[in-house]
Length: 387
Image 1 (cartoon, one colour):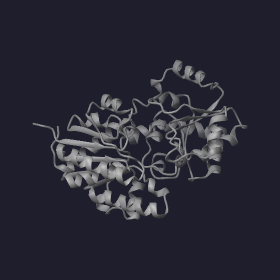
Image 2 (cartoon, helix red, strand yellow; image 1 turned 90 degrees about the vertical axis):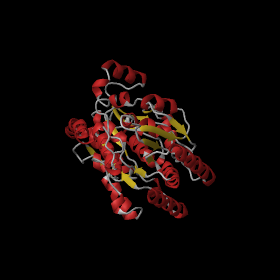
Image 3 (cartoon, rainbow, N blue to C red; image 1 turned 120 degrees about the vertical axis):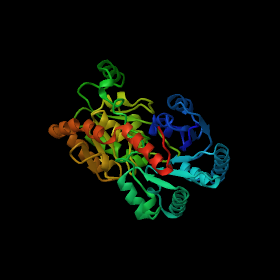
Image 4 (cartoon, rainbow, N blue to C red; image 1 turned 180 degrees about the vertical axis):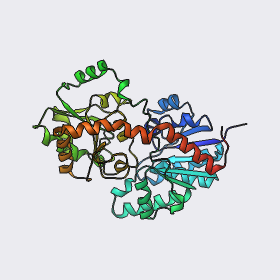
């Protein structure tokens, strides 16, 4: 008997490679899985990792009516040809293109995962447009899955979808965390020492790390400014792991200048394997303005790092104040500075947070439990008996 067909759609291949890593390969045990995303350098890595076909349809993350209509037409033709039982979308642009095309094509089960709302940082006519697009996405979906409980409440408050259409799977998160992979015991002392030497980090240095896109709405401007204020306190380094996105959300000129000129700020760009960089660090600083359910916060915790995180949905569910990290107000340089100083100087608190970090992730967000919960949701909604 042929397996039912499942199509997973993201705007860019990085989301398949990183945010959903391993999940499509797991679902392949039960479905004929196909992925759709824009073209990019990670396509081959996704095919290799997930062992599923990847079909490319160009989607842009910007508002671009002509390109969006073209993407919608191509998506419709693809889905009409493939006739999947389920289409499951992630990220905003893939959401509207995928859900609208799936509805027009007559796909019976249309699932959309919400992992953060970029529109919350937008105002004016653009916000009105994005609100309308978000509502249209959810109206085309048969089921909508916010990946945190706080995000679910935001969607209800904003009037984007009816409460009965919204559900948080497991304890939140789109993919959970592979705690056997994100484990500091996988990184040898030799690798740690070599990497520190390569990056000119001394044994005495206290290393704050940020992992993610180097853009304004991740709180990079506030974090870099706060770091420069603590440099005279102790031997400290700030390690930045991730790509710049100057076309979408550029950093301030003074932030870019500091990153370029400050010898204690180390920028290593995008890394396929971030574990060694967590392993040479002491604290993750993640002062983002908005998130869904940030994988990087779970990854850092699984690697045994305390986290300084913004008081936003997702972060304030993963991090429990003074248990495995510190929660700070959004867009507040002084709050970032104070929290960094606190973990530099209060060794008892730092050690407490560090000792709790991994266990609190393992207990709540182990990846295979999340995957199984998503599979059970597929089975429940469709009535399939999958073995």
